Length: 168
Image 1 (cartoon, rainbow, N blue to C red):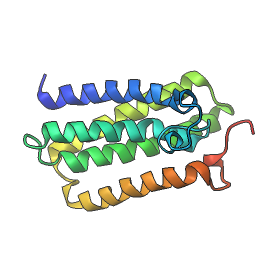
Image 2: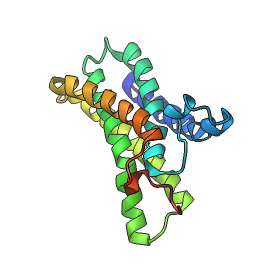
Image 3: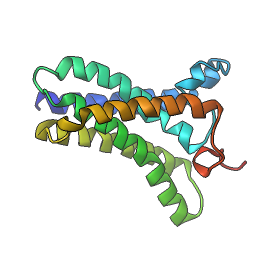
């Protein structure tokens, strides 16, 4: 198995495991408001997008350092992976919930794991093609903007469904 495939598998495992643990850190911290900027503070779909976004951002720092020489297009591919995986979570969640009429924990977990896998599949696909390298500055801006939105909307969420806690 080549080095890139090994790193993508490690990334899937890292983000899946760390993202799962990420779900509980805010409670474990005694609901520390600074911790809440990075970890979900409630059960809204928006907050659950943090489960992929921040762990994959951490993995991106590692993967970039390790793979940048062998794969010069890795930065744009990794950032695209973060963006695609993060935004796939609400797409899949609201699609299945709309079809079935309710949400189910097993499907929620499948949405998370599936989104992680798609994110890393996208990284693998685009690191080899280098098609995304010209838009690297846009991806950097987008990832920073989303991080800022997570920070702001964690404590000042807009009054729309994405930010609503189910059942409330």
